[in-house]
Image (cartoon, rainbow, N blue to C red; front, side, top):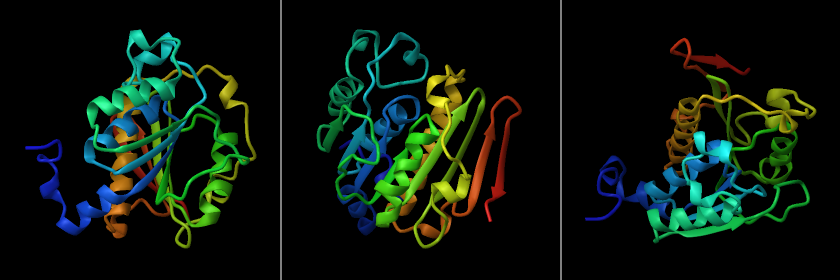
Length: 225
């Protein structure tokens, strides 16, 4: 028996081989990133890069599932690496304790999962990844609300053109977040990543935005074109 026994049968041998050989970038290891990272590790994605410049703080623990009270004050990348290696030691895990920005040097990857919490940083993903042909799996949360979409070069516009933003002050604001919405959005992001890597592109959220409202128990799909 191994860690993959309960889901490997959901894929063909060729599809699961693609997953095991995939190189995934995760931008942020906070609320969304914390769940995204451990799901990627449990599914078996072979190489995972992730970036976060923050330290673990007490209010993080309501939704950032990788961290415990004994991680308080530690670099998130250090604490995340320790936990992920316990979950699945058979992966190539690389954490960068720095902010991901336009000047960052990034490795060659198959896709990037956007787990950032401000638009200024998200816009850098266009330059770092989308312009190089790398898809962006976008997710964001606020209060009981969340949204998910997949941005695929050649099939959808980039982040800037999709959301039409020039940057904001979101990273300087304290946001209220209901913990369950974080795990739902993160799970959907990993589901999208799995579909892309296993070549199930017809099932992706392309040019469509999934809006989730847990307060009203609503899941709604809106066209982006």
